[in-house]
Length: 273
Ligand code: NAP
Image (tube, rainbow, N blue to C red):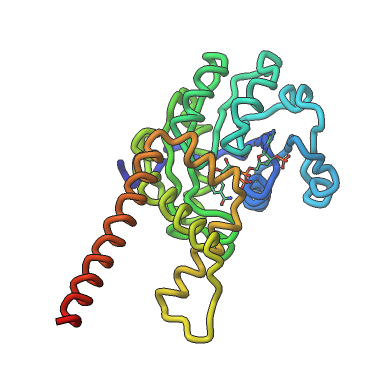
């Protein structure tokens, strides 16, 4: 893993970016790209024509003209669970030129494998994970991590120009293999989402006597349940390291519970003498 500057010696290019999946996260990224002067267009399962009209982003209901539009970059922002279905349904042979495919999925080995499987060999592949979302990134992206792996990059200038979108916003650029990302994310992001979901299941709510730690728990519950359940289950289903972490969580919960019960029975036997 390395924290690095990804810039090439050439000045960054203005890019034509085609976004696949214009849900919460796709829209969030598009707004910054537009502000930076890039040209965006979008396609999605849902009809976002009206919203796109307001944003001045051409929306393509039909994926063929989208693919035939002159895209430098195709940015995949679909859910983790729908990635294979979405890519398999795209007639990728209609691509007119060498394009950089970038994904932003919150797991990394899965999109890397799918992209390498379905894309023609002459397409470049950059796998990224912005470690923030519309809520945590609403006041700027400074110091927020952007994890990436240049999986198959021949056009370095175009790739650097894409990474510059994040670099110029002050993101911490972390170059890391997809495998390493998934290992670390299972023990950090998946774990925090799991605990947030457990707290939501318990129905915890803010009280009039919150400690700071309890406030942290309430915030965790709120931030994790703001994300879709598809996103959370994708973190589990398509990260091969997540199942072990779920078992670790269960075993650790059981160990803590057993320690408490043991202590309680020790206390009870002391007080009964
Ligand atoms: P999400 O629930 O993970 O994904 C929603 C997107 O997936 C929408 O564009 C939706 O299309 C599309 N989609 C879902 N099921 C589909 C299907 N069966 N066929 C075609 N398209 C389908 O929510 P999200 O927050 O927008 O995240 C998008 C991606 O960004 C995910 O891969 C996520 O892991 C990643 N990401 C999210 C965050 C975040 O904070 N939210 C941060 C970093 C990375 P329609 O809108 O057209 O229905």
